[in-house]
Length: 87
Image 1 (cartoon, rainbow, N blue to C red):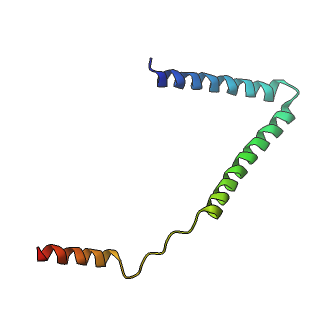
Image 2 (tube, rainbow, N blue to C red; image 1 turned 90 degrees about the vertical axis):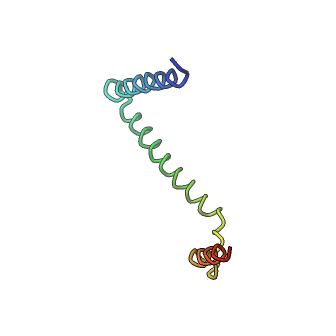
């Protein structure tokens, strides 16, 4: 088995084990409310962190340079055609 396949199988098995452990924590322990609170907090924090990252990226990225109105695709195409016809 190649390295990528081994890592894939390991990821699969760990994921299944975590799903089973999470289910056991939710349904068979007294920590149900705590586990749900942690889960909701982590999910909300992940979504808000992604939104914060998008906002930071938008705020710190300089605006694109404006496109010169005199130079357009049609103008460039017409110039190219004229140059080719002269040759």
